[in-house]
Length: 152
Image: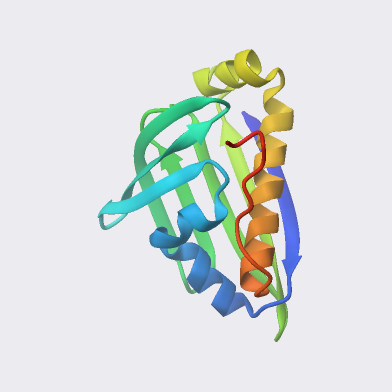
């Protein structure tokens, strides 16, 4: 498995941050490549967007465990892609958000990232970092998602 993980401290309560992040309707506000997300059934979602210059329309599972402030997801179309997000309380007014992504090394999305952008590790790490910065900005009341030249 190719795994990627990053964390960011957010100056907002862990409950408020988790409530925002676990609402499927908010995914396009903080995920760099997502343009549309909707719930298909209890734990099934559909997301659409663009990554590394390629449009995608994907279904998968999405589970939010409010008690443990943890989300888990995975894609149907990209075998071997899954992830989780954990919100951990630091104190009453701040928390740490950790994002973890895992890809099967044979996942064709990684190969396509290499072909389009030259280095899938850089692209994935930048995507996670951008998502964490968007989460921080939104949850701290300092704005929202910023489109980068690479995303447009």
